Image (cartoon, rainbow, N blue to C red; front, side):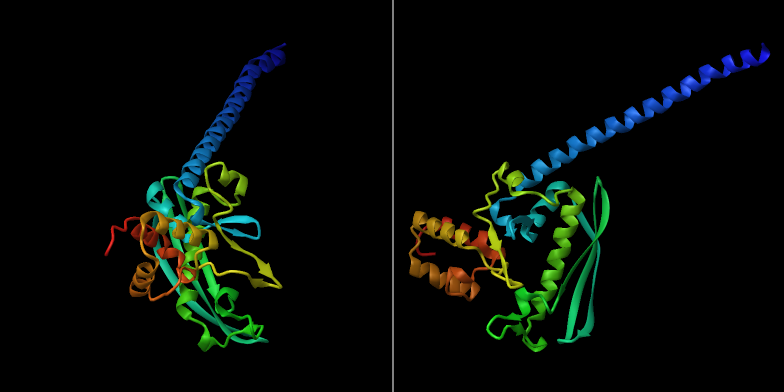
Length: 257
């Protein structure tokens, strides 16, 4: 009988422990659901802050550009610290090449991560000779482009990972007004890149042309200004990083400037 009383005395304590565990699980689930809503809101705000020209269509998938990442950093209060880079040399059957790697710590109220971005002198955007169907000699590769690409890759990697906006689809983006048709497109044929990410796309050229028609800026005057300011003679040579500034200049044309 005494043993039976002891068992009865222990049982209520076990029930309380079970209830405590259930309450803990419910709290975890509630926090997870809250976190999902927060991430959905971040995604909505982030995409809405960008436009079609801040994304590229690479083999049918959308990728944020550095310009888009730079727009999102001040919006969410993202900080970049401890930036460093190194250059490594290596060789293979094709000869010598080098790799630039940038590293930095991206942080905000939601946490912090360390992101890495790399680019090598074998990058086909910068080092492939399409006529010779071979990689250019190292002395013909613009090393500055390799450095910039590595830094850009770090920026995009850090911001998209920190904010949780990776692996998106065009359907998701189009729901917030980002058009696949207006984005620069990159295709690979026989392993080669089909376009240059540094140069504006054909839709962007057409948009700039329409802005010029609307503002009344004479084409010859525009070409002279373009050459004087950027040392280029055609819209086909405009780099993406200067595109919005050029559009703004043309849009604000008042004659004789």
